Amino acid sequence: MVEASERLKFPLMAGWSMPVTWRLPDIDIPLGARVQEAVMVGVGSMGDMDFDALEAMQCMLERRKGGETGVKAVQLLEGDDVWAAGKAGRWSKDLLTSTLSRSDTPLGLTLLDGRNQDLVGHGVLPQLVKDPAAYCIEYTDGTKVTLLMLNGAIRDFNISARLPGQEMISTQFFMPPAPNETYSACLAAKIDQMYQTRATSYPVQRTLLTTGLLEACLNSRHHINQRLETPHLMDGYQPPLLSQYVRT
Image (cartoon, rainbow, N blue to C red; front, top):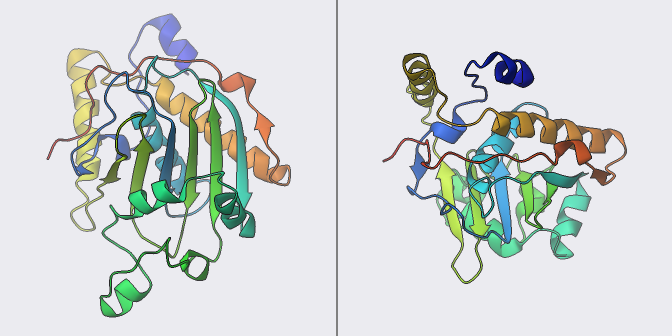
C-alpha cells in the first residue's frame, strides 16, 4: 500500500491515536538529539496493544540525530527471562524507574491503600506482573530500546529516554478514560487535515516500520525467543519537523 501511494502520488496515513494524543508532561526528544537508550512500558494483549506501544515509542525515537535509520535486530523475551535481562543490564533499571514515575495508575500497595511504592527498587514487579514481555530492539545507529509489557504493574503507557550529557526525558502518552476518549478525536483531526491539505502530518513509513517491528518480535517468539536479524527493516525515513501530538 505504501508503494502504491508513492507510485500514484496520493497521501496515505496509518496508525493509531497514541502518537498524536496529549503528553504528561508536554515534552519531546529534541529534533536531532542523540539517544543512547530508551525504555517504553505498555500494557495489554500481545499482537494488539503492543503495536500501539511500539508506535508511540517510534514517534519519539525517530527524532534522534540522522532521523530514522532502521532496525538491525530484535528479540522478544518472556517470563523470568525479562527480569534476568534487567539484572544483566539488557535494559536499564534507572530508565524503567523514570518511566514508571510518569504513570498515574501504579497498582499493588498504591492501589490497595494509597501508599507510594518504588516498584523497581523494592523488587515487587515480579510479584505484580505474572506474564512480562520484553521487546528488545537494536537500531542500526546503535540506539538500544526495550518495550516492556507489564500487565499488573500499571494501566497506562509511558516512556523514558537517556540523552548523552542530559537528564532522562520521560513522559506519559495520555489516554483519557471512558467515556471521554478524546484521543480518537486527536487522530480524526489529523485525518481531516490530510483531506483539506492533501498532505500527511507525519510519514506513513513510521507505521510501516512499527508493523515490521511487531511482526519480527512475534517471529522471535515463534522461534523460541531467539534474537533475529532484520535486514528488511533497515530502510530509514525523516520525521516531521514539528511534533504532531496535542499540546497541553
